[in-house]
Length: 467
Image (cartoon, rainbow, N blue to C red; front, side, top):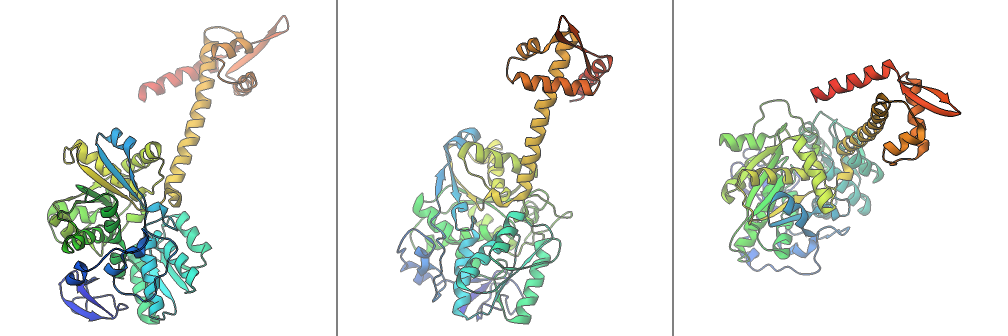
């Protein structure tokens, strides 16, 4: 049993963690940590998640797969590209299942074992399901996971290999959450959904503790938002460090959402307390596709208290940022994480973040889990290869439009950048399409462009005008 505070009405009560809701208003709750206890707390042990045990709700079990203690990379090349001096990436891809949710799984599965839970149930967009499935498998607890229709296949593959029971329910995770809440009440199973279990917030606040130990307090901390819980958790971590007398200042918090699903950003812009959507939610960054953010109010409060802001970015900006993180820093992030860099780029251009500010961007999970970006990159690669092939054929036609010639001469005029065998393959394909023809002179095979080939060149020229 823990002391909990309602994030909506503010009431404090003692309740069993399984109920997960405020008994007065039905709002989401958070654990209450005694301030005096914080002042006497000390970080002890290796640089890992359980180093902060004294600042977490008490659990008897301390299960671990090696979570926490993740790197804080100084992103020098990416910073130079963006025009900023001090950029750091908190790399949560280095956790056991490659996401920040392993912190949540370590604490919640530990607590579930304390309670003698028969099973764990959770609703998830992907990362939490993979984490809980892994930790449940390791420590012998059945895990029942509800996922929406659209979920990254890489994350689903992890749930399957860890032998979780998986049920598809609803279009987006909001639908799955309602079902998970219903199942927990009916069965008495442990509620592992991050939006419903306050221990998720407690687990994620350790990210703030680690950044403090690795760097100190940055000027800005940029975080992707779905439910808003991660931003609130990190803010809570810094506020607890302040209450414990470890830090004097706190960072300005920036919450980022995709333009196609930005209820918290909408509330920030309109200066309202409740997040809202203007249209049907959609984004390829599935990890932050949440229609009704359970911690939206708390996130907005944290943003305002910290002097921060909320902003949205397009899916195109997210994909571009994901490629830049990989190209300049060798880190493959999931789309939701890349949204932080896309937002930083926007804030720098708007002169909100100056070039001398220190900035930490949270990289929540690995891009290897996100199939949408892999498919997009594969399509781009195929298009590039097709473009190269088309470009070679166009060059051959243009050379022949200036006069007949033979294979070896074509190879030289093309710059000798491919084998002669490849040249003849292109010539055969062009001949089969009726774009060129051939004839022999003294045993040497010459090629000439046909009238159809000239029409194709003319069509290409017309297309280039449109482009």
